[in-house]
Length: 265
Image (cartoon, rainbow, N blue to C red; front, side, top):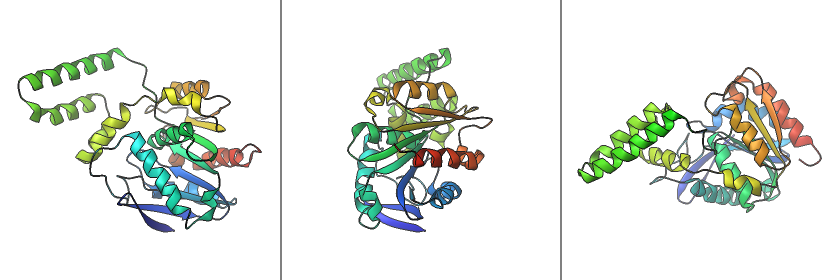
């Protein structure tokens, strides 16, 4: 069932299914709540109330007036929880938080900040760590910085947006190119933030789920998360890529249910 609420002056659309222990799923960049419906319904059928919001800037939720950082999404989410708990009393209690890709970035900061009480944390193909620096990346980064400086000196600031688009195209960051200017600013602000310093602060029981053939957020990132988050579990799903909710929904649900049913979960 779709419901809507206003948070910080912005309309937020979210799906709610089931009754029981509370679970919230934060989708990835360029995605929307409806793409999680099959997984949401299967989890709910086992005695959970599952809410999946369209994150601000995606799906049927409003777009911010200016670019947002991860902290802006965290503040928005804290307000969202407070608001929906008025309708759904279960979310006044500790809840399970699942973050996929970009949603994982938000989930990491929520868990590290401890402003909300979490029952368990699931990072599914999560973003948040800088990639291993390659020669290509170093060269492109250097070119981008040199080009930006040159355009400023030559009073060609109007070229910045086109140059930035070209830079992200070279890096194959197609997600950056598929959204509005405001969300392009958001993308840039979000990906520039390294969350590795947040990981040691996470004390919530954590499950890390990754696709063996994830080429968007490579599997080495999964091992880095696992090493940095004390007591975390790592589960690799074979023969799939970046989107287990679409590529292997039954296996993903199996892993989530097992984690949710554990005594410490």
